[in-house]
Image (cartoon, rainbow, N blue to C red; front, side):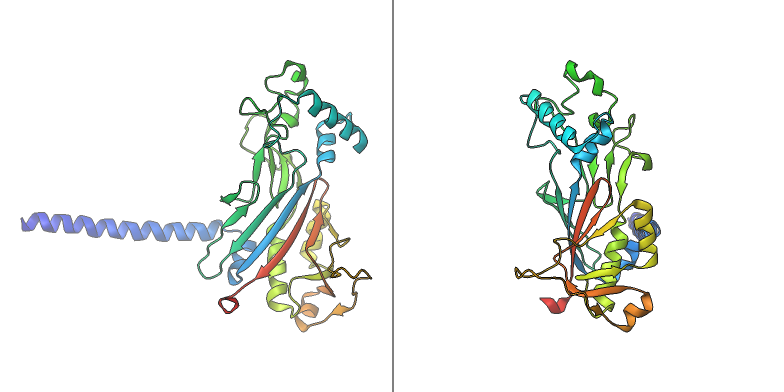
Length: 291
C-alpha cells in the first residue's frame, strides 16, 4: 500500500512540475512573439475607439479596372444590386458599411478584450471577414451560383474581404483564409499609432487628443511608404461654436526632446486616410484612481 502511495505521489509531483514548465514556456513564447510596439503598451491602460471606413468606390474600381470614375462605380453598383435584389443578403453584405471596434487594454493584468459593433460581441482580433456581396440563399458570395456573373469567378470581388485597423484587402486566390502582403489593398501602422498616442497621454503634459503638427520620424516614414494622410478637416473640437482651430504650439521638454509638435487644439478624434480606407482613433487612458 505504501509503495502505491509513493508511486502516485511521484506521478503527481512530476505532473505539477511539467505543468509549471509548460506554463513558463508559454509565457516565454508569448513574450517572444509579441511585437515590440505592443510590448511597449504594457505600461498604459487604455480604451481605444476605432472606426474603419473602407473606400468602397475605390475598392470596386480596383476590382474592375474598366470602371474609370467614381460615378461609373456607383452606377455599376446600383445596377448590380438591382439585378441581384433577390439574391443579396443585405444584412450580411459588407458593401457600404463601416466597422467600429472598442479595444480595452489593462496594463496590470494584460487583459485585452475587443468589442466589435459589427459582431455585437467581444472578438479575439479586430477584424471583419465576409463577402462584399453576400448571398441570401447559400453561405458564400452572391456570384457563386449565378451563371450570368461567371466572368467574376477569378475577380477579387468573389473572395473574402477583410477589414481591420491595420489593413483592408481580399484573401488569396487559392487559400480562402490566408492573405499575403500582395493581397492587402492598403495598410496602416495601427499599433505604432496607439503606442504614440499612449506616449502623448503619459508624457507630453497635454494628453493624446491634441492636433498633431509633426509626428516622430519613424511614423512619418511609415506614412510616406503606406501613403497615409493625417486629416484634421471636420475632426477638431469647436463645441458647436465654429471659428478657426487653435494653432498655438503646445510646449513641453518631452515634446521638444522627441521632436514632436502639437497644436493646442483639442481633437474629437484622430483621422488617417489611406488609398483604400480611412481610420479614426480616439484613445482614453485610465487608472485605478479614475474609478
